[in-house]
Length: 484
Image (cartoon, rainbow, N blue to C red; front, side):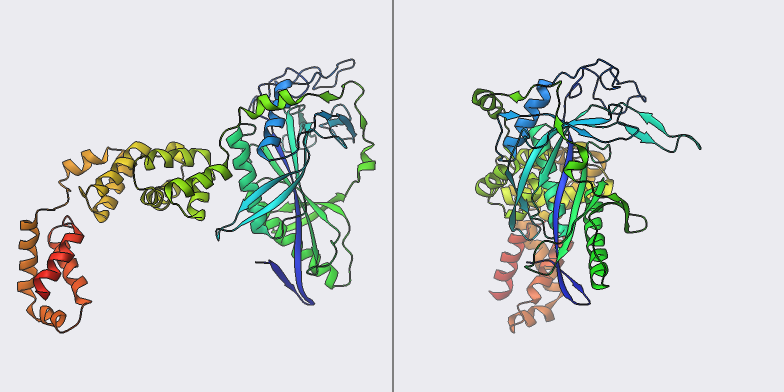
């Protein structure tokens, strides 16, 4: 369904392209041996190369190259066997060299595709324009001193993959789905941890508006948005701003803007630079990066089962809907947890318990699946107890609540609390006889054609047995008793 914003002159369409910076998982930086770890004291992970001392030469980190190629393969993208590092020239206090080593017209990875999983179960393909390697800048800190800005160069030289999408995204929801899927892919691959809070995944959103089907409008770039929710908000707010400007007779200027989530607005930062403003030229200290098919094939062998393939397998092997499979594969830890629960059991029932009961409980606790108080083994046991009629589905929910609180084995809980389901026909029949004897008027109503009253009788019998009677047996025996 096309996402439309209504203005005073009629409908408008949003056009979005995303540039995502993913920090490469590697022990050292892109062109130096300094540590790339996060959270160290300021300026402790800085080599002479990172600090741009005279005469220091960059040396390419082969692991970062492998990680970029691996990511390109995960994006079903073209791997360029020859790429070139260029100098992107601009001045900023946290950029000691006065330029950033990046890639311009010859990136390491070319065009690819990401398949979005939308909430309604549909999918959409979004094109990848390129992936290039570049070094990160340092960090300016303006809140350390009332008069001076401080510079931390720990991040200077850390390897980044900039992944640029084509302008195929048409709504904030699609942008959120794109970032969620991209983060899942790089995490599955082990090439980026996708942690937006720590800045290891950052997003710039290029936003423009147009009348449906018209030519693209002038775009504005929303810089360095650090959460998926904020990206979605920023796109909507910026699109509405542009519509108001155009409908008011104004003109959209191509510029870089910042998003303020507290005020719910975007603000102008600077006019948008063009490629020629950066005076790109090949870095004279670095040879072209050249590798062969064998190098790519070696990396391809290390690829894990990725989200799209895992989703298709879950639908095929466990009979899951596209939506449920998509939820389960969104994070590798969730997918692994589910498979342990579902192994040898009803896949649909396992999915329902994991998605509805477990994820709901974890959300309330504010923890992720890796910190779940209920292990996959124990949740699997609980489903097994339902499957073999040891306990009913209703009792299972009570047992699950205890498991969330204590982390205990469900078999132990059922045994200690005497929660085993009553399947003894004599015990169930006695309870049925008691309820029938106490409600002769309602029995006559059922015999007179009010079948819905049967459900009331089932409820009374379940109540009298503390919910332990097998509901299917209760229903059948009641019907036989009353209807003859």
